[in-house]
Length: 497
Image (tube, rainbow, N blue to C red; front, side, top):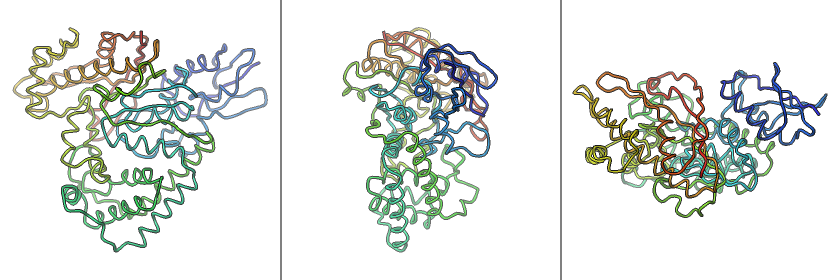
């Protein structure tokens, strides 16, 4: 029997074509030959049910019969008229969390690893839950860990949205809107304290009154759907705040806020998201027990409750050294949702793996640890940190002076994470990481840091086998932070010995 697999109608990176072929080999398991429109698969019984799970193909054909892949159906509801890969399908469009993992890459790797019903998957740096959502789409149970309360909140809200009916979501959104309109003049219920002072500093009084009334309406009227609606509302906060929405750092805006009232923007966001979730549920059917995200630090005790050898595979996009300010970027949402107090935002930012934040005391402590190699990093990793330290000059300010100990702390944390993840994995379990490369400028000299190579060496030092390192092309970034954007990424695949 011959089956033809058709490409999607958008452009592919070379690595996506490579992943596509590996998916076919893993899922369909037949011989195949490329042609101009896709692949021709030959075998005794190539399974259409299995082939429909493929990520990078839009359809499969048997003679005159043709059916779309599940991925094509999921993406179709989220695509605009342009021929571009859709990444905000299903629950992925809940919130524009910075530093998102590409969902197609996550799904392809999960397929190659054999994810499906009965499999347990770990994401030790889960962010806003891309791996968890794609695992749920495949019927697998995933556990995510993150130290950022906002990331955990969003991950669990996404998983919840997959299991709640379209009717329940629409009913909840309608109740919230009606309650908000009914109580437009009510006191928002602010308690005096740091949270109030913090939000008053970043929102005009009328906007703050609106978002507080909306928060109360969602909490009181949305029932089980409240986390989903709160996440949708929180995604709008930066645009309506006094902060420059295009800047990851804390800078006052010079542009006017949107002219559309906040409540109308919220209602439109609800409608768009509910439509995408309904489309996903129509394709995937009912999903229950889709997984969970846990608040904690994977480098210390977050996996202590996991049974040794509990997970079949792991996949993540870990933070890179001197990473995005994940906590600071979402500080308005963290305060508005009450996930942490404003006074905890900066300390928590400094605790993240890969953070570029240091207080003076922390910097001094890690400088000493670096000079002594107190944490016993392998020689090559200690050497790059010392090389950066010796390159510092009088023209380098506080942030650049902190680069060498920050990198040292990052490498120590990642080595510890590899040890903790290994304890939780089954023997011969695979672990895939999408790792960004780094660079820094010290004394006006650019230093490129091959982060994937360093992480591979650290993983090997604690008992992982390096199975693969594959370069991944990235889209060119524009805007305020283009100079600091990741210029290249690598797929690193490890195997537990």
